[in-house]
Image (cartoon, rainbow, N blue to C red):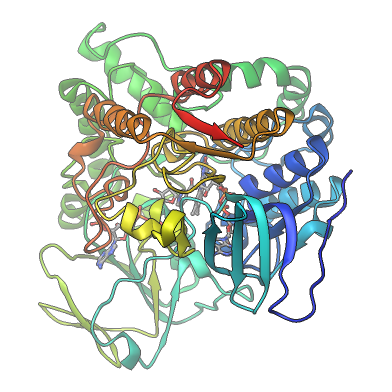
Length: 546
Ligand SMILES: Cc1cc2nc3c(=O)[nH]c(=O)nc-3n(C[C@H](O)[C@H](O)[C@H](O)COP(=O)(O)OP(=O)(O)OC[C@H]3O[C@@H](n4cnc5c(N)ncnc54)[C@H](O)[C@@H]3O)c2cc1C
Ligand SMILES: NC(=O)c1ccc[n+]([C@@H]2O[C@H](COP(=O)([O-])OP(=O)(O)OC[C@H]3O[C@@H](n4cnc5c(N)ncnc54)[C@H](OP(=O)(O)O)[C@@H]3O)[C@@H](O)[C@H]2O)c1
């Protein structure tokens, strides 16, 4: 194991020097640290804004926060020993358990000694002369590194909408992605929850249990399928222990990296009755697998309509008040064209006496007042406002690093019209900068640990390739970037995904953000093949130099 080859650090001006610097201590950064330090022997430092490891699970501690990927697939697969020694307790573990897992990984592989916590990166500048990145942190730290790996996550920059009057609110407000570690006591309070994405849908039922009153502010009605969470049986845990390799193989073979196959049948290969029976069974089973009932749900609008109508029907059955049911089921986009939530009693929550739904399309939020939320129709008095309003996704965390490449050109300039890169991994003009699960890669359309391991392994092999040949730099050629941007656009257009015009996949949730479909929709297995092939061909499309 290589230790840190720390150069002198006498005060903030004298930078510490490393071969590689990683930003972010979530799933991505931890595995990247292990790979570069222990497999390649590079002197490596990891800088993390938070005070602990976990990334998403360090920050998202809101009530109800748990993964939607099933636990046996929401984990690393690179180590057989790790797979064998760790046992999940539930089908979808809650945030403390996932945090325990990632802390266990950090301890088991002795990662902590090479991590600086409370170290938010505020600038990263490429110095062409010496082929080094100069990195600065908010707390005055200065670092030099040949390789810079941004493992900052796709969903780590909280999006608090700028609603006039927020500063005047006399109560308390919180964003789910920056949840206070000590928790929030909702007992007896009047709570306003803005947002009905995966987060709001997880949080609402749990908040409603203790709040005096919960008002859910819905802008876009959303589909959701029951999660059907529960403890894992000894039998299932035993099955997992014997089948790690087969499960991994399955996750690597599917387009979305989950441990279930997509049925190879069209929604129209079966009769209406059979189709309904298939949906009914999938609804009872619960989870993201509902989406895998037919192969054409994401590419054929008519096929998609069959699933969408089924779910709308379920909402109307569950929700007793017809007016509320109508608002909840008035969904304007294809099923799963936005990231499909799964839930535990979300629609049932609206049958509680202490829960109301406000349709923000009919009565837009105009301001936040000292007393609560003012819509066009009336004021809602509140003690606590919960923003489940999502993230400046994918590009947000990268742009917030204030990266400057060759000739001082900023990433913000390079991406003015939306992200442009090669394979989601590298940007032209920014040598030796790698982005783990960057825009243009399958990332958020995939069960993310699968996408993360693939990227980290590819980056690690690429750096090893450079070192073993005495090469100093790698960056993509402009033509390759051009081609990849076209490929990403074409892959999205071949699906129904862009039809959800308000989706964060398109950047539409952040005012002023370029409307570009950001993740690569061509499927994880296909993407892995492309990346492997490019590496095999000596990193075709990249310029490698001394
Ligand atoms: C509530 C929630 C639930 C999710 N559930 C699932 C799921 O079920 N399945 C799934 O596949 N995916 C899920 N995701 C996506 C999730 O983000 C990924 O699964 C995974 O955790 C990403 O890991 P990461 O290391 O790439 O990024 P993150 O976990 O986001 O970690 C990035 C880290 O970088 C740090 N960082 C960012 N900027 C800076 C900076 N400037 N300086 C220093 N540090 C910085 C952050 O503090 C953070 O710790 C979920 C996301 C959310 C928000
Ligand atoms: N367990 C899980 O797997 C899990 C759980 C949570 C999150 N996640 C991940 O994180 C992603 C983000 O989820 P999220 O729910 O946090 O965010 P999101 O999907 O972006 O949802 C944000 C919600 O807030 C609403 N909103 C935003 N700004 C608003 C405004 N100014 N006024 C009124 N409403 C506003 C949005 O409405 P519009 O739709 O109209 O924009 C939307 O309903 C998910 O898609 C998923 O990838 C995963």
